[in-house]
Image (cartoon, rainbow, N blue to C red; front, side, top):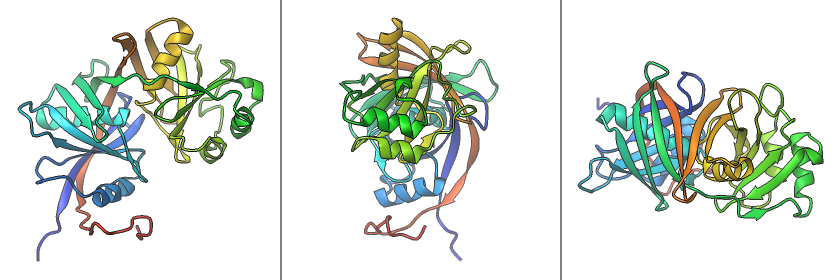
Length: 306
């Protein structure tokens, strides 16, 4: 009897040096295959993993062995790129291929880079410094109809507690709250579906943020997308780093994400604020194999019985 085909993967808890916190991120390195898995296969694997993002990597056909193509899937769709996915990818390639620096080309043409080294704070963890494109708020939504009222109701707070609402080209909505509002998961239960319904059309995520006078952090955030909470994110620093740099008058920032699993990062704006350099940790918690999802290209995943 022929053994079923399998794919190897690992799960990296990202934006943290402590296992079982941060954002669990599955990574598949597909160098051994002749080409990419079909989109249907990658989407099915992402649904099976059931995390906010699942990362798929293939080495680019280039002289540089550290150049990789990356694709990032939520359980529902492919994304242009994923910040915490870059952290997970860099750590996975560091552990499997010994790479200390990696260049990534995302499916949408976005070029990213990351440097990885063993963490100085936690045995078994690694520290990644990644360079992301800055994508600041380019449209304010404070006065757009009932948007402010709708978001305040969705959060269960007063309308005057919403300081500002803005949107960037990635279609992230930034909701700045009064610094006296403690919106951490231990203090405020937020319904992601209500936030989704309160959002204007075509919004990718809802980013709740505020100045954070607790500990050594400059600001805090919680991030919601597709009607659920993202435990620790990286791509939202593309908008939050320039946002808080302008608000606080500083380019070096430290942030905390405050859902139950918690994540942390430091960042600095570079090259006339065109780039955001983000430093964050990650640690491998799972490594194993999964059945190869041998499905035809025509499968309609929306109707598949998963």
